[in-house]
Image (tube, rainbow, N blue to C red):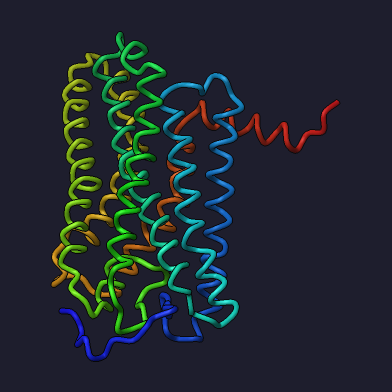
Length: 314
């Protein structure tokens, strides 16, 4: 419900209340998220460098993985450093333009992330269900479109979100979150937010529900194809190539669906913040480990990369 228009004030900045309003937990949160941020940045940049430096990994699967690592780096860098600065400086304010900018990049990277995960499922579908035609289907041109398309699409969707948000008038400035997200800000608006909320649902359907359904359809076909493999070893190998991606799917969509597609009556500020931590901090941190721990090629490329950096050239 919009607030009483008589209470309208000109908002030049918002107050991000953060994960906890208890000052005693600030240093613990700072240490925890600082470590998570460093691990996320180092892990994802190592993945990008390892894939870029090893010609054996110049394949569609690793090309999409490098894009995903770049997106995860952007997603966590857009939210966590600002929270760390706020804790360190004891200031929770963020200017109105900076808030909209943070919201733009949050949705920009989040949308690309969601669509890329679906693209990676399609890549696995082609590799397992059509192995003889894989190189023909996953041509460089198609890979470029599948990787570049989400970036362009996300740019326009995120900009539309911001333009719709910029027309609103806000009566309150206290955001019960640690970054500027749509749902908490819409609750502070004095003006009608029905257009914004309808657009949120449409976008959620396009970039969360649709990719998730495509992933389920891809893996249904993949499971049928794997079960037709005669040898147990062949089935194990096929399943192992998909297990990492399925873990990422569960982590990412399990939290985003709860935030953007569940009815508002079952959502609380605490649940929203907990879900946001999962897909803005925890998932980007875990992705490099998930994809590298069970991947011999990637582990080999990472070892070679680290060895080159720590061993002086002769």
